Figure 1 (cartoon, one colour):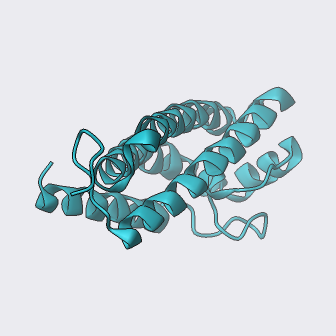
Figure 2 (tube, rainbow, N blue to C red):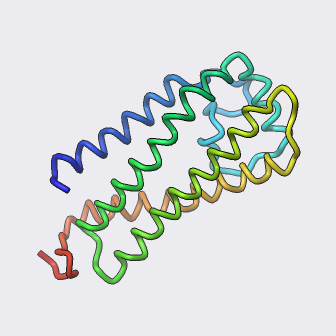
Length: 170
């Protein structure tokens, strides 16, 4: 990937995040500071999920049909950017692990999105507590994977020691 395309991928990831934030629910009745299931780093209870859904009731359609489709693109963009950054700057002996962890993040984020969609789709009729526990656990796992990956990516970028495809420093 060229440097220009890599920068464009990072810019697209940041732009997607900004658009999702701007177009998502703005007020959630004080349930959370950031009004999104995806933004919750710590686990939440089924009652909290239901309170949140009640508070954003007028915006559920926007969440389902604008934010969630964008959230299909964001994890892919983030995963690709992480994998490319690691390919450029991570030492060979950890490259496979880091790139694999980025793929695991992508899979967890997609499964989390699917489970959150069940809660959003069944906000009126209700959903079993287990759905909220699974969604919460997946969200926590997603952040447990993503935050260290972003820190390692930042560290590798700041040290800027480039490696070729065989793992030799350039």
